[in-house]
Image (cartoon, rainbow, N blue to C red; front, side, top):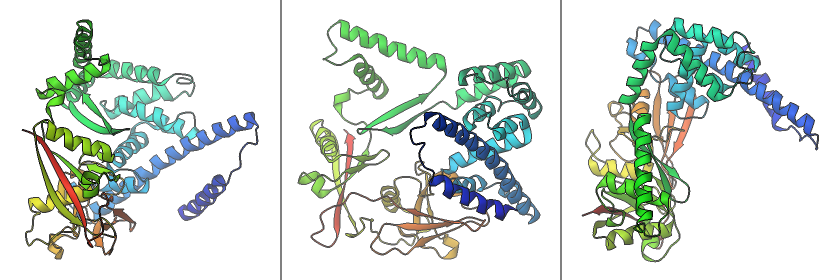
Amino acid sequence: MGAVLLEELRAFTARLQCAETTSGDAGLGIDLLDAIETLKSVGCAVQAVITDDVATSIREDRKARRLPRSEWARGVGSQIAFARRESPNRGGRHLGFAQALVHEMPHTLALLRSGRLNEWRATLLVRETACLSAADRGIVDRRLCSDPNTLDGVGDRGLIARAKALAVELDAAAVVARHRKAVSERRVTTRPAPDSMAYLSVLMPVEQAVCLQATLGRDADSLIATGNGGGRTRNQLMVDLLFDRGTGAEVTSGIPVTVNLVLSDETLLTGGHEAAQLQGFGPVPAGIARQLVADAIDGDAETSLQRIYACPQSGSLTALESQSRTFPKSLRTLIDLRDQTCRTPWCDAPIRHHDHIRSHRESGATSAENGSGLCEACNYAKEAPGWTARPVHNPGRTHLLDVGTPTGHHYRSTAPPLPAAARQSGVEAVLIAQLRAS
């Protein structure tokens, strides 16, 4: 039955890919959009049921093999993520979402399966009831989703408000405990933005966030009013004030931490146009990379250059093999520069662990070829029973590894390319500019 359904799905997908346009019939186009949206919701519901079934099957198999309880669920979220071509972190979320719908929120699942509720709105309901017990969660599910008309026409904010109100009514203590836990998870993160910019995100209690923004706005207005704004806009002043107060240094005084900037010798020295790679951020245009180096030098920042070499055909870094079981600092740095983010397919989390691809107990060498940079979650996931990994011999090309899951599926991960460089001498010269304020 499952195999027949799989073939039918693939055939229908092929037909849908070849669907023609509505030929100017707007009414037909709206009907098609509605039908496809319903199809997406039904697909999400079926995905949730299958996800829970896969997780249950894997856990029961490991339990039957008398593996430790800690091994029963390891790596399951990653397998779900690979099948959906997403990061392991999102795979874990999909797994939790599926288990909540199947075991605790049957009415929400039914609405999703009927097309009356989309995946995002179902996710909001699961998220807002996560702090409740299974029994209380079932009550919220019944009161909001047993009648399809209850949420008909209600916006996302209204849906969240109703779910929160019911959660407080049923278990106020759990809601308070959830708030305390959320406060304990406050953090600061960055993510790339267009035009070589970045977003600095601060997760903090709402009263602190409002206070911080109001204070920055007030002080920026004061500088503008007194003529000390230097021609900067209010938003620019708020950003500069945040930087000044967060680092204790003026914006123009240099970078207060070490920053690795990987660029070719041509980019730095001869006005080349090859983009550089700013570690922890991503590609940076050549002109901006040169300006970063120049500003660091002009601002009395400590600046050093270190030359490394890469294969002229692929740009992949080269290194010597180490006899050490753990990766020495220089080799870890090289792997960081080569991999840039976690090497698990579809995962772009920061590198936290450096580990062997073919394990050390299997005579895997401590080398760049047999090493990979991984986030903590992915490194632990690959240790689950049935997982395999091996480097793939890929002469003249970038570093390649193969990841196998317990279900027999294989996925490949290719290291991102480094900046190209001069090729006159048979090896490429790549420079690491380390910028640090003195």
